[in-house]
Length: 440
Ligand code: SAH
Image 1 (cartoon, rainbow, N blue to C red):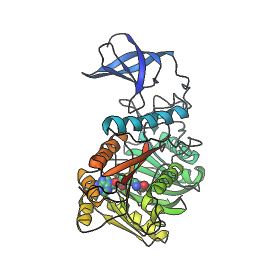
Image 2: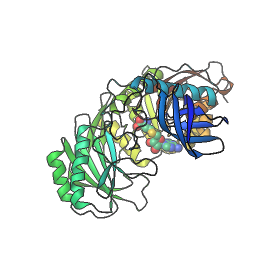
Image 3: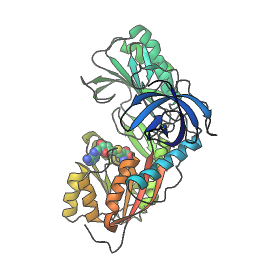
Image 4: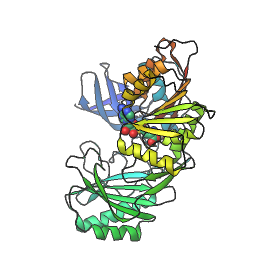
């Protein structure tokens, strides 16, 4: 741990950190360093097979290195890619998908250039600002306190205004029960604010008045009373304090009702881009049976329902299934059914019972698909399988399993930048049935 190390950065890690090699061959992960750069670092952690280091200086900079646009960059845990221009983040995300497919899946799949945003700022429609005493702000980096945030370039100005009003209120009403302020902004600028607390809150009416008076678009104020050990910012019971019960947002011409805890994509513009790619991949003609597994509030299935004969959605969380059904009714969609169950439990049952979907979309959480579902899809052998993934590593693993013995043929992968300036990348991968292939 003593002194500085000179390092040549040769690649990037899954957090878009630079990666170089120490003299003994161990990989060294350096947040803030870019491939091709010669840097000086200080080692902060040594493990048997790798090291972590902080950047001390850059001796030869990558041409795409830039000054971060956000003054909180490096302190706030929200972004990790503002030291490079946007084009390079898109390319590094594409490479992550290529590398995962090659190294983990052993697959050669054409990976298209990442679909980016024309303006990758102010693009999130949901914010979760942690509260700690009088501080409110960005997600704290490992081991650091909540950063007292002035602005967040990813958030809508109304959300930032609500966060600032809440800080002003905290000067008088800071109390240990307060944990988060959550905001949602719909396409028309309507704002919902949820104060999340462990127990009763003093001064709530004062905050409600301030937000309705000074946060543009303010439509709805909720209090969320959290469980004693909440798993996330809204893990509790929500009560409407003032205003409208629901926000209404739009995606590809459909309306979606948003209760505080409803599931919805956080970047509307890129969700539309993603679903447009999924629609291209599904190539529906109006007659097909489409299964939408891990369907959440039904966004993918509903956006594709107009082009399909029927849609069957499967989702684990009962509230999300209820949202999906409401959203179908709200949009007059009558050919979509939503079932609450584990995809890996119910689909093998349906398929054993004779269901033969023409097209399947899957959008699993980061851990990817359950092996039982992979097996069931190999048996069902739909014409097309559209895999929407938020983790290239599990995508690669699952695509390799689906493609084994020539069951499915991966056609292409399209990365989409849903979370600009973070390391996350969404990918749509199209797999087609190989005709004449056996059913496993
Ligand atoms: N396609 C959705 C979002 C999917 S996110 C949309 O665009 O809104 C992944 C979803 O998978 C979550 O809603 C999660 O609750 C659900 N899920 C997780 N494990 C599951 C399982 N085993 N079976 C079915 N759904 C599951």
